[in-house]
Amino acid sequence: MPRLSAEARHRVAFQLNGRPVAAEAEPRMLLTDFLRHTLGMTGTHVGCEHGVCGACTVQIDGVPARACLTLAVQIEGAQVRTVEGLGPEPGRLSVLQEAFRRHHALQCGFCTAGILMSLDYYLRANPDPGEAALREFLGGHLCRCTGYVPILAAALDAARRLREPPPHA
Amino acid sequence: MKPARFDYVRAETLAQVHAVLAAEGGDARVIAGGQTLLPMLSMRLARPKVVVDIMRLPELAEIAGDGENIRIGAAVTQQQLLAWPELARTVPLLAAALPWVGHAQTRSRGTVCGSLAHADPSAEIPLALLALEGTLELSSRRRRRVPAAQFFTGLMSTARADDEMIEAAIFPCRRAGHGYAFQEFGRRHGDFAIVACAAVAHARGIRLAVGGVADRPIARDYSDIDGAALDDALDEFAWQLDARDDLHATASYRRGLVRRLGRATIEEARRCRA
Image (cartoon, rainbow over all chains, first blue to last red; front, top):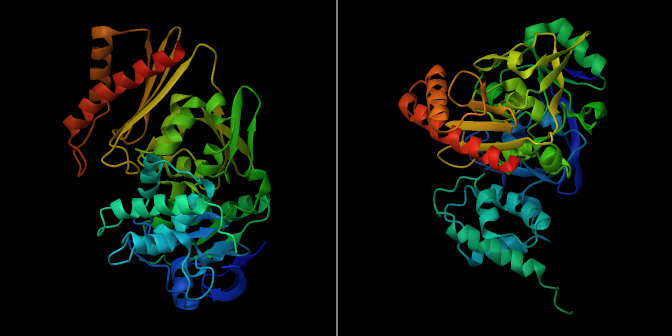
C-alpha cells in the first residue's frame, strides 16, 4: 500500500489539458498550489482557499471541482483540465470565452477562470439550459464585479452558438 | 491557509484502511471527496498525522438497492447519487434534499458518507437519514450498524470510534402510503441552512426532523394531529431545540422558522401521500 511520507515530495503523474505531466508534491500540497507554483499554470486563481468562492474551479475527470479542496496527491492518474486548455489553439478563444468577451462578462477577471471551467462542463452536459438552472449553477461562484447578468447572457449566447451546426467549409 | 504536514495513504483494499485506522486511531482521518475535510485541514481545525484516501476502492463506489433499502458506499459522490435514475422513485426525500447540499461544483466530489461523517448540524444528508430512520454501516476489524438517531451525538461529533470508518449509509426506500417532503431556508441557495426540515407523513401520523437549530439534527414523531394541536406541538419542539443566536439568525427567528417551515413541510408530505 503506498504510504507517502509527510516530510518528502512524491511524484504525481496525471494528464493536464490532454498532455501527460509529472511533478513532485508533498502530501499536504493543494492542487491550486501544485498547478500554480510547481507547474507554472497560473490561469487557475486562488480566492478564499476553502471552497466557497469558486475561483479555483477546474475539471477533474470531466467534472468541475474546487482545486483548493483537492490534494495534489489525489489526482494521480486523473485527467485535469484548466482554463489554459479551453482555447482550441494558442491565440484563439473557445466559443464560451468569445461570448464572455462579447458580453463583457468579466471586469477584474479574478473569478473568470473558475466560472469558465464550470460553464464549459455545464453547457456540454446541458446544451439547452434554462436561465433558472444556469443561475442556480452559477451560484457556486462568487463574482463581485459584474452582478452576474452579463455572465448569464454570455452563457446563454454561447449555448445557442454551440447548438448551431458548424458552418460549411 | 495551508494544511499542516501529514502522511498520505492511497488505500487499495479495505483491510489497509482498517489497519491504518487501528494503528493510528484518532491521528488518522479518512479522506473521500475532501469537500469538508480539506477546509478543516487548511484552517488547521483538523491536524491528522495520516490521511487515508478511500476513493480508489471499487467496492465503496456502489449504490445498491434491494427494494427495502438503498446502500450507498463511502466513495459515492453526491452528484452520482443525484444522477442515479432510481433515486426519485426509491428515496424521494433524498432526491429533494440533495440539490440543497453545497453547490454542483462541490457535489461533484463531495460524498454522501463524508457529509454524514462530518455531522454538521445544518447539513441536509444527516437530516434526511435521521428523518428516514436510516442506519450507518461502520467497519473496523469488526463491523456494526448504528441507527442515525444514535450516530449523531453532538456538534460535529458522532458515535464512530477512532478505529472505525463509515463504509456505507443505508437509506430506507419509499414505502407505500407514505409522503415525504424537504424544505430549507437559508440566505442564499448553497449556504448553510438556517433551518431545514424533513417530514414523513403516513397513515398513523407524522415524523418531522429539523436541522440547523440544535447541535445535531433532531426528530419527533407525532400522531396524525393538525390545526391548533399541530401548532402547539411545533411550538414545543421549537423551544426544545434550544436555538442560539448567531451571526446568521437570532434564536427567536429560528424558532419562528421551525414553526412555519415545519408546518409547511408536514403539509407538503401529507399532500405527497395522497
